[in-house]
Amino acid sequence: MQQSPSSTPTPMPLFTLIRGALNLLRRYSSLFMGLAALQVVPFLIGTLWMQANGVEARATSQLNVIMAEMTRRVENGQMGDGMWVLEYPRADIAPYIWGMLGVYFFSIFIMRNLAMAASVIAVGEHYRQAKPRLLNVVLSSLRHLPSLFAWGCMCVLALFIALFFALAQLPGLVLGLGLLWFFGVRLSLVPQIIVAERIDVFRAIHHSWVLTRGAFGRISNIWIILVVLLGVLASYVTTIISAIAMALFGETSAMAIALTQGLSTVTSIMTLPMAYIGFTLLYYDQIRLAYAGVPSNPSLNVQQ
Image (cartoon, rainbow, N blue to C red):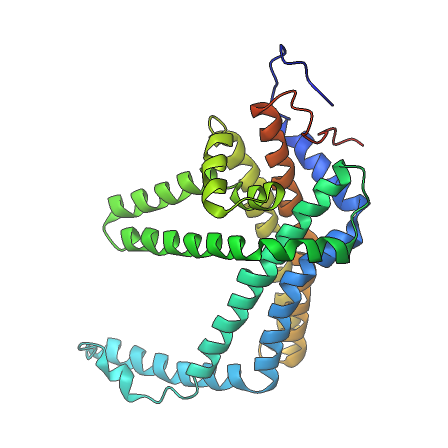
């Protein structure tokens, strides 16, 4: 769908974009859910492994002892400087902490970037009239991992800076969250730009800043719907069913834990692709608005 240079392009309506993401997810459901599984399943395997080997149970038991002692000291006014915590053995806690850090790092910094990059490539292939295939898009996404990893490190640094502001009084908290939201929206298309345009992270940051100019409210709404609301919905469903399982089998039963984690994995696999596809369509639409009539841009007719 090309626009004449003289016409003024208008943004794709929000619900049209969401409908387009749903259409693509339905058409390539096995592909996109398989890509989401790349991110979710390693986390599930890691947590189940720590449960099966007793790492989580030992850490939880030791933390319960520490929390009980903390409660006793608070009730008796004996908190002091808090150095008493160091008197308790940490050999049972450290393996769990390091294990979770490793699982999160592998799942988010590597597999999430791989799944997201492959999703961007898959959407691009669809609009180039080429049928995307799981193995092809995954292999093609590997080249973008270094730049996406660098972008992830920048995001973590920004989060720590925001948390530093949050430690201050209320104005600092508001300022930190406000800056995090503002820059998060303006730079929300960086991953898509890195993959679609095959450029480094610094050029992608500049291009995202240009593309998102004047679209702060639109991108905020899309982010809220595709990330926040879908995440809340998935978490709400998981919480209800896990509460039922705990009531039937007990809070610490293996059945309740397995059911909760399994359901969380399934809902994540079903909802994550919407965010990947939605922000890719948003990227192409912002490209269309910024460079209307450029022949190299893919068609954005989401009804096809």
